[in-house]
Length: 262
Image (cartoon, rainbow, N blue to C red; front, side, top):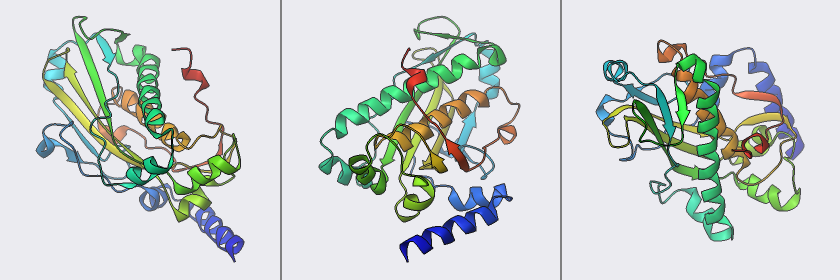
């Protein structure tokens, strides 16, 4: 019966694969409540499912007038992590929880750094290592919610270094985890905030994954994806032009090894 249910789920997903909009709507996470990390809640625009982000706002006039030439990626803030969600229960049973959470924050900062570095020419800026450089846009982000997949914690102790096949599509159907990020951009180290966005993503879905496995790997995949989309958003004329991408990967080989040299 268990196997039959999995086959049924996969059959339904294959039937839907031709309709990207339908898949995106079905698989997209609901946004978590906004925190005080992001200001101007009343200005944030709720985006539709074609956009990678749930909420977005920018003062384009201020950004243009600032003549931005540099971008600084600040350390990712974990102090806004919302209490009372699934993270609390996992933290009680995983002895490395706090260290893993800080590793997640460090990973996210590196992912944002690399994403903006790859877009330097397209955006017309240089990524710098200090917020004190003149004409610098400071990008600050916070992980505000994190709910690891129950099955990923179980699998970490049972299958060692690799994902079980169809982690997102099969085990994730039973208990999907998620991660929520809020970001803001300010003019200089202490300048006004001129842009903000927020996004919540469910664990990624892959039919076959050869990714190195840890119980934070699904969140890392999403954090890397959000970082790339944030940097890419600076290259489009309007947020609706930013492609969200397909909600399913057929073959995943995610690894954070390409971030280790930073």
